[in-house]
Length: 529
Image (cartoon, rainbow, N blue to C red; front, side):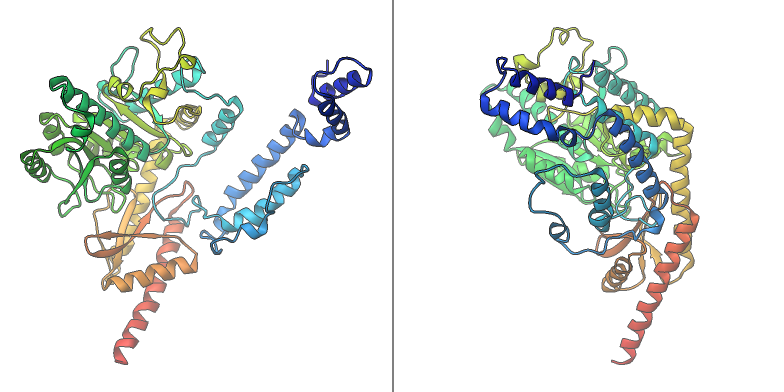
């Protein structure tokens, strides 16, 4: 039997015309009969059409990624470029898929920064792979909202297992794994920013309850007024934002000459704040800072946090993927002292955005901070002790089936394939470092540990600002800067899945040509003074 929408509406209209009792009002029924003639265009994307258009879209995506190196990496548009190119309101009548595809190239692509171009060296990488894209397609088709186990058991259980898989890949301590009945476990957050905020809020709730248990007369507001969180002056701006949202004081502690937060600096701040009647409760340690990929000293910070009963959260958003390689795992030493740990597979582990993995030693700390259980979200299995309801581990209620991406990528690449990918990027960064070191006009500004090189022309900040401006105006490659102390520095991050040595060589040649022009111009200006 034909169960298509067109057949349904046709039968309904026939029924109405035959004088049978209508299911809707007369006005609605009449309207339904009028649209019957146009129903074929209204419901264009049936299964057959989806098969056809889906194959076309896969071809378009494959062609886009295969030819991305031919596109200008950085868009040549001005703010507000898009609005005049599209109508002021949505169309009343259906439009064709062909017209939409044409508009992608005409309207969308001119304003796209091509993050997966082999000439994109800005920020940090954002992961992309065909297996992850296919998994995302399946996630969209299943379309579950996995806020609880019963809402889609596979969505919850695969996430729990994938976080254990990944935890074992980076050799996390057993306390962070869910296993069959562990106290810890992992969860996928939308970003490292969310993970930091979730950890801070959980730590805040925990310390408030501990203090109120000892002194019931204390109000939450009185305690919060004295709470202090700490991070390095090299930590990401999202840490500062977490403090703002959490309503607590946040102190940025000066890092050492290698841009690392040390235990002695933290202890000094703790002693001063406790003497002033404040309550230290939360420390963010960063592994792989955004500016220069420096590493805070976990082996010094961790014991202090444990001794002072302070929650230590580790933000390894970029660098964490590298810890699947044994030669980089030492950078994570000290994680055993932490209460929570986070990194982004969607940066460097070939799992498309969004997928930010977070582990805690005691899941009860998260659940205790976020659990609300209205009747309509309860289910009979939730008290069994075997059930995870991830809505209690995060700020949003709804959540997508993101673990499918991890499952596809881990199985289709294998650990060895992922390790090879990380090692290739690190090798390319050292290749670029070597090119910089061979040119006496330039200097390396921070130790190159993973896939980021910080460099600059030996000279003024203004000279380096001018160089970056020329680089990005040319739009052959794309870089962004940072400040290291008082120096304006250029960051060269290995990003694309398809980047090769030839792209590194091309980028360096382009940079040196622009530098030569700038230095020549500067010399001429000095001679004319």
